[in-house]
Amino acid sequence: MLPRTLIPLGLVLLAASAGARAAPEALPTLDAGTSLLVVSPHPDDETLCCAGVIQRVLGAGGRVSIVWVTSGDGSALGMLLVEKTLFDAAKMRAYGEERMQEARTATAALGVPAAGQLFLGYPDGGLLELLGEYRTHPYASRYTRTTTVPYADALFPGHPYTGESLAQDLQSVIERVRPTLVLAPSPLDGHDDHRAAGLAMQSLSARTHAQYTMRYWIVHGGEGWPSPRGLLRGVPLVPAPRAAPLHPLPFALLPAEEDRKLAAVRAYRTQLQVMEPFLLSFVRSTELFSVRATGP
Ligand SMILES: [Zn+2]
Image 1 (cartoon, helix red, strand yellow):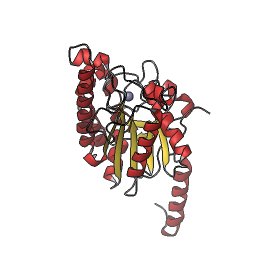
Image 2 (tube, protein in one colour):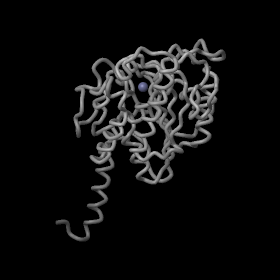
Image 3 (tube, rainbow, N blue to C red):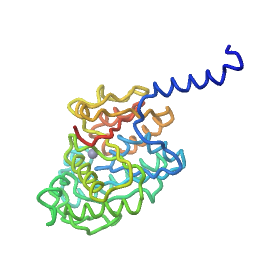
């Protein structure tokens, strides 16, 4: 035991050495002043990447909003396996509606209020085209056969499928949510829609001299990742091969946060039928975020 007179000095030294050893944090402090916006290319990405952070922010008294850029209405494989039918345009729109409902259920299980569930309804499988050839003239979804947002429950029904319209709608979401922290997909993600969503947010934050902090995540991280596949509670997520240049940092989940993340993943009934082991392999003891959007 330390002599009484030495205790304060001992505490100071302990605190100093703990500070020197502290690992860098994946995210800024999450508290009642935090307004988190998760940019989710498809219904399910927000849960896979960020369910732990979402719960932590809400638990600290902060606000959480999710913006789904597409409604996941482009999964021909999903239609075939889940609905037992080849797709046609009306069925794909109905499939999009079903996935939007799953997203509401999943994020409600994490504590996100309906006011924080924001759908843009842009074309699944078409976002990268919007940033290129279709910046100003409308893109036609090869699945739903529409050139405008077809969902009555979306924030801006009828908005055209152009890159300019997407950028405007994302800016409207930013103005509505006033985020302090945005979690967006890295443009290094292996899925084109994820890359496009990340690029769109990067260019928006640069153009508007954004005051919020941005962090990046990856869901499609390279062949076989996350490895091993399937549900492994309490095991940390290892960085994806594609994330190597990003040096992502871990955010640790509490066991109860892992439980609710699993409950949220379970709400994605259509997606579990298509790729259950992949989805379950994100229910781990950590989530990974990087300061960098892309490589050096
Ligand atoms: Zn996705």
